[in-house]
Length: 233
Image (cartoon, rainbow, N blue to C red):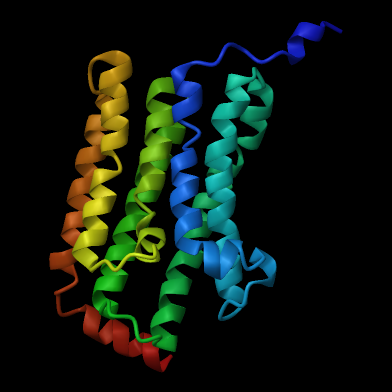
């Protein structure tokens, strides 16, 4: 067997940026005390549903981190085999994400965020996540677009992690940070390619529209009967 097959390829800037270690950092800062440092499976979460929700989302973040590194070290077949999780995890994340939002509202933990805004914001994030990562999977043979869409789609669901940073934020502040995060991809494009990639431009525009629409949409009347139904179901 050729021993060189096990040697890593020369690292490129993409191999360092796109594993998204900063995304892992954002999540750990947000959920460190209540989840990661509390032992994850042993963490005192409200119920089993929240445990499943946490496990799915952490699995996705680890998946996002590992996949680019497999390409960087030349493990393309492993990358393709593990890629099936990119199809399995998002639907499960959406289902358990919605159920967890309902459970949170039902428990009424005294959050300062109104339930209508909580639902509008979380559902917008989930829609952006599914839309952008699905697009990323469709164009997976176009590596430049694929990696950008996967990381941008993941940035769209970081609101709950940011809201739990040890810094007081109002809902608008959380949205502003979420809108600032994709600028990292924009700046990386400008630094590495001297232009903004087309996928970055379109995805960023979609994220801006999707997140900013959460505030006005949350004021629509149909949320009130939904909230009442959740609390009494």
